[in-house]
Length: 495
Image 1 (cartoon, one colour):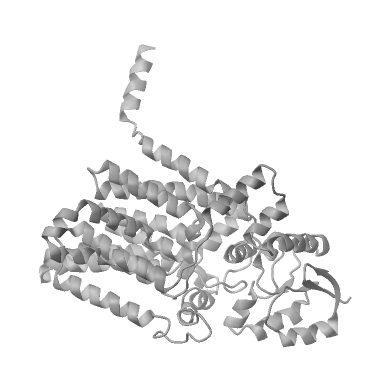
Image 2 (image 1 turned 60 degrees about the vertical axis):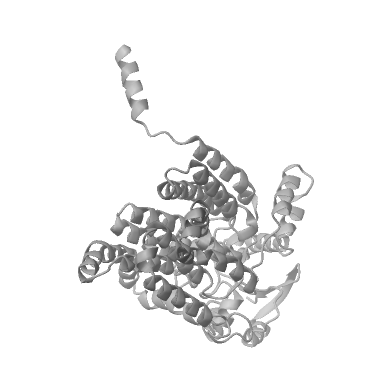
């Protein structure tokens, strides 16, 4: 018995104890994210992810059989989840790990500033959990930030291959992490002052990191190539994002108008200044790294010029870390005025928020709506309508489809209601789950061919202000309008 006690004490002494702060933060994450587990399927992009994930579960090939314009990892998670509850639950677990990684990064950068580690991590938890920046929604940004943070932590620990590999994985959620990776490359080049330094940096840092970054991408290329799907993959996940950069708004058709050129110019000027003053700036190497990280992450977040708040999740970690560094180094900055250039990216964040007019969500109303629902003061339909007036109607329409259409038979919805596909558990005819993809990628002819070939049992016209003339003619010849569910016209195939 005495030996067992000695063994237990020895085990307890060697066990890495979780800081009490981290336990408190995990509890805070759970509390702030609890309402997200009970949200309906209301957010259009989540509906697309779940629809494509549902198709993958049924053996459909992503990009060839079902289309969206992101790399595959987000759809893979949606396929594992199966519905919005489990998608959000996976996100909850993912964010617990992400918060731990952010805490470790703050600990690495500010080892003797416990109060600052705590302050920054609390701020990170709140900003990534409340709906202000859509942190409650399972978008690519909220997933890839954890991998980016882990990559920068690995870089600081001189694990360069793994730094590249982790950022390479983040790139398979969405393409903007390429710019976070660019910050690591630029920083590594700035530290080389002569040819010997450059060779050393290339051999020990840049090449291993680049190899790690490219490995996940090459793995997907090999996989999709083996399935005969490589062209669809490259085109959908990467090439189609190029015209997306200049398509925001009816008149914004050039990089000059949507702001890509001036943003690129600001980035170039900062990089030139950094290179010019690099010897002095490298007196604070970690701050220089985080400064580059924030600037390039901000460029990636603003790439499309769209005001979607979840884009800003990409910049939260470097913004908070750099703000903390500015606080603790304020007196040093006053003495060394030239080093103030390191903190210029901080001031670009509120400027970008104002210029691009990012919209936000009502935080207190969000939690009040959940409280009223859980306390029985609101019924389910009232709770659902708070998110969007169409949500309750979409659930009713999905129930009608499930009761009417045999399992595994496809349908077609003309409109932007992908949640109906996900909720009814029926896939769309053709590759596109929303009308705006058909419009943006000129998929009318392809979609019409799929409709004629498969002749779906149901074709639904959701409330939408764009016409599909060929579809109208096809309906008149072979379908009967049998039902209207909350303004959605349902056409049934003639036998």
